[in-house]
Length: 170
Image (cartoon, rainbow, N blue to C red; front, top):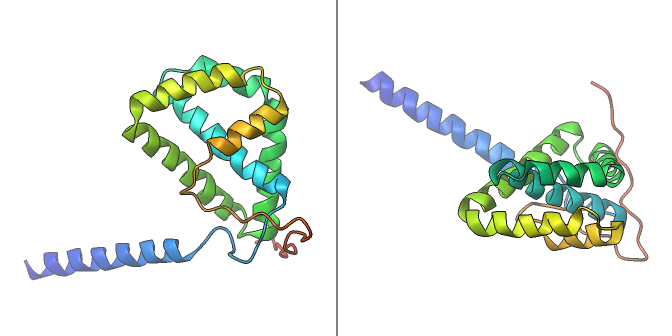
Protein backbone atom coordinates (compact mmCIF):
# COMPACT_ATOMS: atom_id res chain seq x y z
CA UNK A 1 0.00 0.00 0.00
CA UNK A 2 2.83 2.40 0.84
CA UNK A 3 4.47 1.80 -2.55
CA UNK A 4 1.25 2.53 -4.39
CA UNK A 5 0.80 5.85 -2.61
CA UNK A 6 4.45 6.74 -3.20
CA UNK A 7 4.14 5.93 -6.90
CA UNK A 8 0.91 7.92 -7.20
CA UNK A 9 2.51 10.88 -5.45
CA UNK A 10 5.53 10.64 -7.73
CA UNK A 11 3.29 10.50 -10.80
CA UNK A 12 1.36 13.54 -9.62
CA UNK A 13 4.57 15.45 -8.91
CA UNK A 14 5.99 14.52 -12.31
CA UNK A 15 2.77 15.54 -14.09
CA UNK A 16 2.81 18.84 -12.19
CA UNK A 17 6.41 19.50 -13.25
CA UNK A 18 5.64 18.72 -16.90
CA UNK A 19 2.66 21.08 -16.85
CA UNK A 20 4.76 23.78 -15.19
CA UNK A 21 7.49 23.41 -17.81
CA UNK A 22 4.97 23.57 -20.64
CA UNK A 23 3.30 26.61 -19.11
CA UNK A 24 6.64 28.31 -18.54
CA UNK A 25 7.88 27.61 -22.04
CA UNK A 26 6.13 30.14 -24.23
CA UNK A 27 6.10 29.45 -27.92
CA UNK A 28 6.22 33.18 -28.59
CA UNK A 29 8.76 35.41 -26.89
CA UNK A 30 7.16 38.27 -24.99
CA UNK A 31 9.59 40.80 -26.47
CA UNK A 32 9.06 39.73 -30.08
CA UNK A 33 6.60 41.73 -32.11
CA UNK A 34 5.01 40.73 -35.38
CA UNK A 35 4.52 42.45 -38.70
CA UNK A 36 1.03 42.92 -40.08
CA UNK A 37 1.66 39.99 -42.44
CA UNK A 38 2.70 37.81 -39.48
CA UNK A 39 -0.47 38.78 -37.60
CA UNK A 40 -2.49 37.86 -40.70
CA UNK A 41 -0.81 34.43 -40.72
CA UNK A 42 -1.72 33.85 -37.05
CA UNK A 43 -5.32 34.90 -37.70
CA UNK A 44 -5.57 32.70 -40.78
CA UNK A 45 -4.36 29.69 -38.77
CA UNK A 46 -7.12 30.35 -36.22
CA UNK A 47 -9.75 30.57 -38.96
CA UNK A 48 -8.52 27.47 -40.76
CA UNK A 49 -8.53 25.47 -37.51
CA UNK A 50 -12.06 26.65 -36.69
CA UNK A 51 -13.24 25.61 -40.15
CA UNK A 52 -11.37 22.31 -40.04
CA UNK A 53 -13.09 21.39 -36.75
CA UNK A 54 -16.42 22.34 -38.30
CA UNK A 55 -15.65 20.25 -41.34
CA UNK A 56 -15.01 17.21 -39.20
CA UNK A 57 -17.34 17.69 -36.22
CA UNK A 58 -20.29 19.39 -37.93
CA UNK A 59 -20.40 17.26 -41.06
CA UNK A 60 -19.20 20.15 -43.22
CA UNK A 61 -16.33 18.38 -44.97
CA UNK A 62 -17.40 19.35 -48.48
CA UNK A 63 -17.59 23.00 -47.46
CA UNK A 64 -14.15 22.80 -45.81
CA UNK A 65 -12.64 21.16 -48.89
CA UNK A 66 -14.17 23.85 -51.13
CA UNK A 67 -12.77 26.54 -48.82
CA UNK A 68 -9.27 25.04 -48.90
CA UNK A 69 -9.38 24.54 -52.65
CA UNK A 70 -10.63 28.07 -53.28
CA UNK A 71 -8.06 29.70 -51.00
CA UNK A 72 -5.14 27.33 -51.44
CA UNK A 73 -2.65 30.03 -52.41
CA UNK A 74 -3.53 32.31 -49.47
CA UNK A 75 -3.45 29.40 -47.01
CA UNK A 76 -0.09 28.22 -48.37
CA UNK A 77 1.38 31.71 -48.21
CA UNK A 78 0.15 32.44 -44.68
CA UNK A 79 1.16 28.96 -43.55
CA UNK A 80 4.69 29.55 -44.84
CA UNK A 81 4.71 32.97 -43.15
CA UNK A 82 3.68 31.42 -39.83
CA UNK A 83 6.38 28.75 -40.13
CA UNK A 84 8.97 31.42 -40.92
CA UNK A 85 7.87 33.44 -37.89
CA UNK A 86 8.41 30.49 -35.57
CA UNK A 87 11.71 29.52 -37.17
CA UNK A 88 13.20 33.01 -37.03
CA UNK A 89 11.58 34.77 -34.07
CA UNK A 90 10.22 32.09 -31.77
CA UNK A 91 11.31 28.67 -30.58
CA UNK A 92 11.34 26.84 -33.93
CA UNK A 93 9.33 23.97 -35.35
CA UNK A 94 8.39 22.51 -31.98
CA UNK A 95 6.90 25.85 -30.94
CA UNK A 96 4.98 26.00 -34.22
CA UNK A 97 3.62 22.51 -33.57
CA UNK A 98 2.59 23.50 -30.04
CA UNK A 99 0.88 26.63 -31.36
CA UNK A 100 -1.05 24.79 -34.07
CA UNK A 101 -2.09 22.14 -31.52
CA UNK A 102 -3.28 24.82 -29.07
CA UNK A 103 -5.35 26.50 -31.77
CA UNK A 104 -6.93 23.18 -32.81
CA UNK A 105 -7.68 22.33 -29.17
CA UNK A 106 -9.35 25.71 -28.59
CA UNK A 107 -11.44 25.22 -31.74
CA UNK A 108 -12.48 21.75 -30.55
CA UNK A 109 -13.34 23.04 -27.05
CA UNK A 110 -15.36 25.89 -28.57
CA UNK A 111 -17.28 23.34 -30.63
CA UNK A 112 -17.79 21.18 -27.55
CA UNK A 113 -19.21 24.05 -25.48
CA UNK A 114 -21.36 25.63 -28.20
CA UNK A 115 -22.00 22.77 -30.60
CA UNK A 116 -25.18 23.97 -32.32
CA UNK A 117 -24.18 27.64 -32.50
CA UNK A 118 -20.66 26.74 -33.64
CA UNK A 119 -21.92 24.51 -36.46
CA UNK A 120 -24.58 27.00 -37.58
CA UNK A 121 -22.09 29.89 -37.51
CA UNK A 122 -19.49 28.03 -39.53
CA UNK A 123 -22.08 26.87 -42.08
CA UNK A 124 -22.85 30.53 -42.78
CA UNK A 125 -19.16 31.39 -42.70
CA UNK A 126 -18.34 28.71 -45.28
CA UNK A 127 -20.95 30.16 -47.64
CA UNK A 128 -19.47 33.64 -47.23
CA UNK A 129 -15.87 32.55 -47.66
CA UNK A 130 -15.92 30.02 -50.49
CA UNK A 131 -15.73 32.76 -53.10
CA UNK A 132 -14.53 35.62 -50.89
CA UNK A 133 -11.63 37.78 -51.98
CA UNK A 134 -8.43 38.00 -49.94
CA UNK A 135 -9.59 41.09 -47.99
CA UNK A 136 -12.83 39.42 -46.91
CA UNK A 137 -10.89 36.33 -45.92
CA UNK A 138 -8.49 38.39 -43.78
CA UNK A 139 -11.41 40.25 -42.14
CA UNK A 140 -13.07 36.94 -41.29
CA UNK A 141 -9.81 35.56 -39.93
CA UNK A 142 -9.41 38.57 -37.64
CA UNK A 143 -13.03 38.39 -36.52
CA UNK A 144 -13.00 34.69 -35.71
CA UNK A 145 -9.55 34.47 -34.15
CA UNK A 146 -9.17 32.83 -30.75
CA UNK A 147 -8.31 35.38 -28.10
CA UNK A 148 -7.23 32.69 -25.64
CA UNK A 149 -4.33 31.53 -27.84
CA UNK A 150 -1.09 33.46 -27.36
CA UNK A 151 -0.04 35.60 -30.31
CA UNK A 152 2.62 38.27 -30.66
CA UNK A 153 1.72 41.95 -30.53
CA UNK A 154 1.85 43.73 -33.86
CA UNK A 155 4.80 46.12 -34.07
CA UNK A 156 3.92 49.79 -34.10
CA UNK A 157 3.82 51.33 -37.56
CA UNK A 158 7.27 52.88 -37.18
CA UNK A 159 8.90 49.81 -35.64
CA UNK A 160 10.16 46.79 -37.47
CA UNK A 161 9.79 43.21 -36.25
CA UNK A 162 12.28 42.02 -33.69
CA UNK A 163 15.50 40.74 -35.20
CA UNK A 164 15.57 37.15 -36.32
CA UNK A 165 16.99 34.56 -33.99
CA UNK A 166 19.78 32.36 -35.21
CA UNK A 167 18.35 28.94 -35.91
CA UNK A 168 20.74 26.05 -35.65
CA UNK A 169 20.17 22.60 -37.04
CA UNK A 170 20.32 19.81 -34.51
